[in-house]
Amino acid sequence: MPERLWAPWRLEYIESADKATGCIFCTKPAENCDEEHLILCRSAHSYILLNKFPYSNGHLMVAPFKHSADMNDLDDAEMLDIQQMVRMSVNVLKGVYNPDGFNLGVNLGRVAGAGVEGHIHWHVVPRWSGDTNFMPVISDIRVIPDSLEATYKRLKEQYEVICGR
Image 1 (tube, one colour):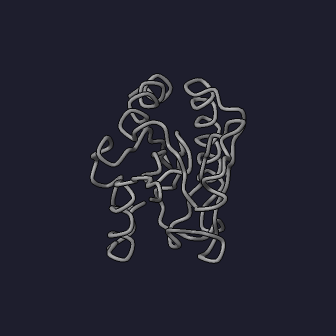
Image 2: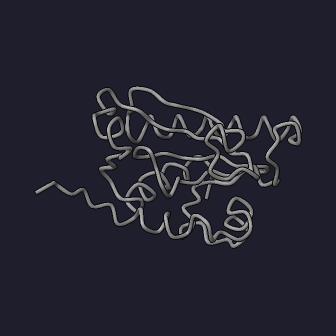
């Protein structure tokens, strides 16, 4: 009998993948339900949120409020703001989770892996020595040891200190 790895949270992603209406990076912050939408911090031009379908614990995204898929549509102040939010995220994750490293990246276009093609966003993914076990290699499965709710609570406390809310 084969062993089973249950990931019930994944069903929500599968069922909603083709049903999304509007841009999640525009609609979610506009609703002002930050905890519900896992938004950790806002600045003048961008915001930080937990990835609802993470590659590792603490996988964050930084998105500009401006809807665009092209970096060239962002002015210097917006780009600086985003990079400052990325740096802040790295520092918060270092303080909370003490990872051994990070993957930082932007996927531009579907062929590059962009799940949301129309709104540019940066990924901040903490990494630990030994976290790349056999699961992602043979079956595209990630093992996430903590719930999104617990991760949100731990990180939100640190962002409130830094962001002042």
